[in-house]
Amino acid sequence: MAVTTEMIKQLRQETGAGVLDCKKALDATGGDMEKAKDILKEKGLAAAAKKAERTAADGRVEAYIHAGDKLGTLVEVNCETDFVARTAKFQALCHDIAMQIAATNPLWVSRDDIPEEILETEKQEYRAQMAGENKPEAIMERIIEGKMAKFYQQNCLLEQPWIRDDSKTIQELLAESIAEMGENIVIRRFARFQIS
Image (cartoon, rainbow, N blue to C red; front, side):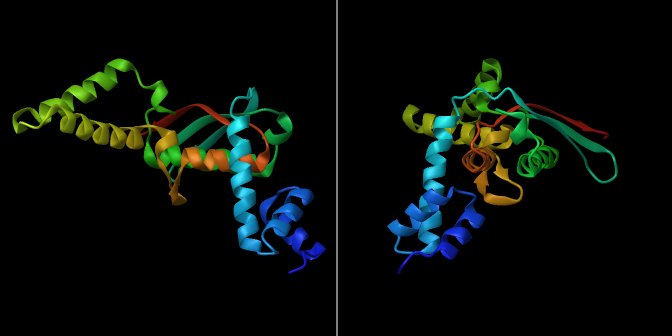
C-alpha cells in the first residue's frame, strides 16, 4: 500500500512523533497504522532510556486535594525545561501522579530510597515466618525475593500499578511520557496528608 500524506498526518496526530519518523514507520510496515505505532513506541522507549541520564532541573510541584478535603498530596516532578513544564501533557502527568499517591499511599519513590535497616527488618520477618518449615536455603531465598517484590510494589511509587491502567506501572508511565515529551522526567519527592 502506498503511504499517503493523510496517513502520515494521522499517525503524527495519534503518536506525536515527527513527520519523517512517521513516514519511515509507515514505509517499513507497508502502510499498516498499528504496526507503525508499535515501531514508533519501541523507538520512543529506547530514546527514553537514553534521556534518563540527562539532568532534570525544572518542573513543577503538583497538589491534589481529594473530595471532602481530608486527603491531599504534594509531588515534585522534574523535567529538563520550563517549556515542557508548562505543557498540558506534563501537567496532566503530574496530576495523575499526585492522584496515584493519594490513592495508593506509597512510602518511597523507588526502592533506592528505602533505608537498609527497613529492608533487613522485612527480610528477617519473612525468615521468622518460615522458621519451622525446614525448607532448603535456596527455596527460602526465592520465597523471600518474591515477598520483597510484593513489598516494593506496595510501597514504592514507581513499582505500583497505575490506577488509571493497571497493565502498566508508574515507571512505565514515566518512560512513555519521556518518549512522548522528549525530555527526562523524574519524580523527585512527595508528601501525603490525611485527616484520620
